[in-house]
Image (cartoon, rainbow, N blue to C red; front, top):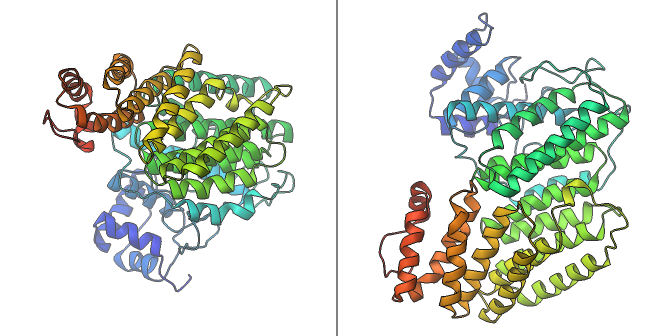
Length: 496
């Protein structure tokens, strides 16, 4: 007992709207359903959990996490409740207890994916949680990312040497795996990654989360170091995909949690560049959500913590994300300087060292695509940037290989937006309609968000017959729930 309030639990309790007596009854009922009929919680015990920081014994933390997850419609983990496995309650000293101890990553991964799958099964949405600030994540993880992880043989062990602590989270019945099984998992990552690039994250997100949950169970065993590192690599790749797919369908707090899990998993496997790339995904998410200052905080950490072994092409990608954030803030000079550095790094990568699998999708087309996006974003502040945005986006479109449908939609939207800003509505109309051709086959909410931004730019041309028709087609094509959330009205001549 800490004798201090558990502020995390108090906040969630307030959001849930239960009385203490009601929560006590729900705990007893849920525990019985989970095979613990002997549990007898009362109002005074609930009060002690909240007011004095008393830590309930297992299985109560797991029961509470399940109850709050169902009540709030988003993943709530044991750590979110202010509890951890070793008896400490959480005050707001860091973000979700970052960074986690080496023995905790597999447990956090498995618990979070299990809760996420439960939400999927019951049709609940991942709303109601707030994104952590980029500065908070960077401050909590800076020293941790800049140091080398302990080998599994040297890591602290709090229980049986072959397993992590299984109390309080669900996982399938794990067993040791060999190199062939890991190779199969690595191939599955490539399949999921290709599907995401083509059709967006909505259709396969649940499958990726389920696969990640199974890998978490595998990591409960102490494999030989070379196999354990590869498993951590699979976990990092799947967690990034789960995060990216979650971001793609608008589950933003869930996405951020997966990016942080991916960074932990990559570092556990000794891959600091991969950990940094996971954080760069969180930065891209922040720019998309209109928080470029948070993105710059995250990119500062990613770039400094990536390690000397990071390839020039990876560093070039980091610079393009930083430039996009600078463009969103209207810092044109800084953006141009950063993109210049990105070009130099990209050209300097001779390709003599094969890129890791997670970098193979960042090629010349993506380089131009990110430059086009940065200049198109800057054009909102400086319209003269629109012509450069159009040029880069067209180059990206020419270079796109088959199977990158979502990126092609983004390219079409970038070109159309740049043309609207550059006062070329005829060409803008052409590329906007190309985007509409395939956008309905894609499950990416981000494509709709970008289309909504382009729709806003059509307002000044709403009196043109051709653009009036385009606006109506966009309104009809936009999913009704997204159109309602984003404020796409039916007024033909209104500037949105």
